[in-house]
Length: 146
Image 1 (cartoon, rainbow, N blue to C red):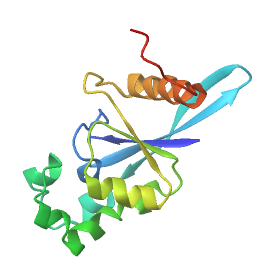
Image 2 (cartoon, rainbow, N blue to C red; image 1 turned 90 degrees about the horizontal axis):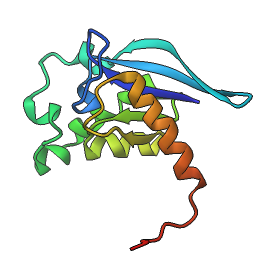
Image 3 (tube, rainbow, N blue to C red; image 1 turned 45 degrees about the vertical axis):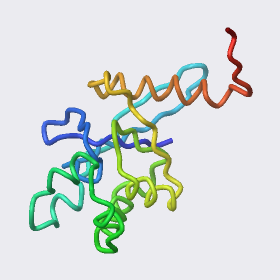
């Protein structure tokens, strides 16, 4: 399975809207015998970072776009550029994301796994995903025990 994480230029975790991230780290996660291994496959530039003639505004970076902007067709289409980069990934791990990012990835079959705000290292984010995804796939019922 391939997963993507938004990263800054210095390859540390990017915690804002992945649509505005400078780059993406693409990892492979494989189960070999009874061991789960992950490895970095590539670092890919975000096409919007290269193509957008102006810097992203604070609203876009913080996922706080107005309703008018969220419904703007041009703005929606910008989010589909992520598919060029993430098209062969199964998951995007992200601290935050906007509705347009979620909708565009969902239509391509890419799921978003939310990284808790307290996690700031890529390796911990990946391990959190592996544990969270494996537990979630095995749980059939959740009951309040109190």
